[in-house]
Structure formats: C-alpha cells, structure tokens
Length: 377
Image 1 (cartoon, rainbow, N blue to C red):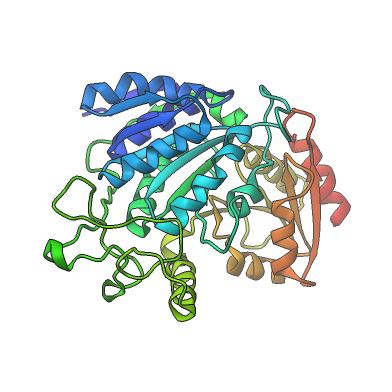
Image 2 (spheres, rainbow, N blue to C red):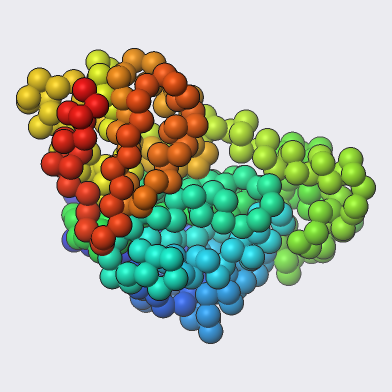
C-alpha cells in the first residue's frame, strides 16, 4: 500500500511528527516564525483526545507543558528566539527536576525582536547554555521537512528516555519551506515512553538511583505522590544542602547524557572519506553546503560535508577524527560565530578552521562556501 504523502511546511511537519510521537498536550504562544506549529496542533490534538492551550505569554506556555508532562502527558511548546529567552528560567526548572518535554525553536534574527521574518542560526549556544547552572542539554537540528518530522519524533523519544527537556532548533528557511512528506506508518518509527515505577506507592522515590541514572517517573494524579522542587534534592525529591548529595545529583545529571552519546548523537557525512576540506554545516545551511561540495568535486576539489543533526551533545570525537585527515574545516552558519567555537575547541591545532558568518537575513549561498574552500586550499 502506498504511503500517505503531503506537501507540507516544515512547521506543519513538526506538528504532525509530534502527534505521531504521542504528544497529547501543547501549550504555546504565537510568535513568528513558529506559529504554524501551534496552529496545526490546535487542529490535530482535539482529534486524538489531546489538549491545546494558548497561554498568556511564553513563560506561561513553558510552565504549562511542565505541568502537562508531570501528569503523564507527552508535552510540547514551540517558539522563536525572543520566546526562548523568556522560557529560560523554567527550562532550568525542567532540567533540575528532570521533567521530559520538547521545545521547538524556529530561529530568527536577534537580539531582542531582531528580524522576525528572516532566518538565523543564532540560538545555537543558547540551546546549550541558555539557562544558568550546570545541566545537560540535547538539541537537534533537522535540515529538511521530512527530517523535521522524524527528528521531532526522536526528540520525544530522547526526552522520555532520559527524563529531560529536549530542544529541536531549525531556522526560518526550513520552517517555512514546503516539501513532499511521506508519513510513516504506525509502528514504522520507534516510539519510546517514559519508564513508570513498579514499586509500591509508599516506596516510590522520584530520583531513586537504584534504577540507574534515570529513575522511573510517576504521573501526578496517579496513586504515586511525590515532591518536585527546583532546589537540589535527595532521592525522595525533598530539598537538601548536603554537599555530597548535591554533588552526586549534579554529576549524575551530566553523566546520564555523556554516557549515552552513542545513543543520542546523529550525524550525516557526505564525501568525507577522502576529503581534504570539510564543510561543517547544519540546518538549511547544510543544503547549500552539500550543493557546494558537489560543484567543488566537479572542479577536482576533494571537499566533503559533515552535518551534525545532534548539535548538543556536540559530536566532538568524530570532528576530531576528521580534523586529522583534512587541511581545513569550513563552518558556514547564519550568525557571527557560534558552532565554529566548538569546532575550534575540539580540533585544537589539527587543521585550519574558518567561519562564514552571515546575519543579514539572507541564506548562505553555495558560492560563498566554494570561495572560502578555495581560500583554505
């Protein structure tokens, strides 16, 4: 049987991916260029018994999905840069309380209101370090409408599996372009649900390390009762200032992601086997990068593309390996230097690293990338 296909915006594909993943609660606030995600969710969620709510602002939208997630729902919100800035305090709460949820950030120019209708990739470091304190981060960066669908599904899987907020960051170009989407059949893509407790209600501890670094999570409103706080806490969820417990909690939260890199990291490589120069690009910029690589190969230049789909954790091991075989790594991104800083950090002096930065609301072109590659060589 032929699969269902449709011509969808990236934002629309995101909403359908969320529903496929089992999302039943969306709390949001309209903001360009992500509003279509909320619009589609407002139509699709009631069809499956889910709930959509438009909150009074971005802070309340983030708060609402934390509440929804704690009741057992798979929950999501969608925003752009200014809204993401407002969500940071509650994002930190989700991190320390280990509340699974998905945040979509369709990036636009900034700071502040910036360029609401123009594309940008300037929230990359915010996705890692936006909220204060030591905390793990997972951020995914799809580059096509089909991939937005599948990476939204994967974001829910990672959020539920590791009990933490997961961000999906893509730029306005990918969010608003339209492409042919094939809808996967039910069961075709893996769907992961959170681990629920099996102990007696009186024995339940929401951060019980006897189950490993990710404890089972009970739903509020069920027979399990427990405490949630933004403070450092013991296994029972109640606050503590004991140095050894605070230290252990902080290290456990980082460790649960660092030890799972092989499960979390996802990258695409194109023509990297013999590449003398690597274009490291993500999101819509990677599309220009791939075209540039093809044209360079036609001219006899051994270029390759490395596309991190998982931006955080940063795929440092593979980037280090590529740096040892190449003369240079070119990092085109629609900002004035963010991901390039990570590349510089991990490759040290193994090869040259060059930025192509653009912040005028226009995409980086294949010609810009080709010219920079030739400079390096």
